[in-house]
Length: 93
View: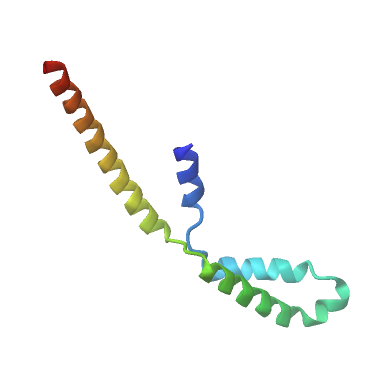
């Protein structure tokens, strides 16, 4: 389960301005024909709403996530080594 969770987190990184623009454009394209004349205004509003919504989320960049993932892996390795040593000491007692 932890692996699946970390894979999901990996893709919650910062969206680029291009990604936001593409998504806003797709949303504007999905608007009914009667409102297409306001497409540019809608697209700008969609972009600002998306940016504001994503800004409120406490997301990290992919780089920050990968650094913390590496730190966690090293910590796990050290913990496993210490558990092994402790097990050996307990056998000798």
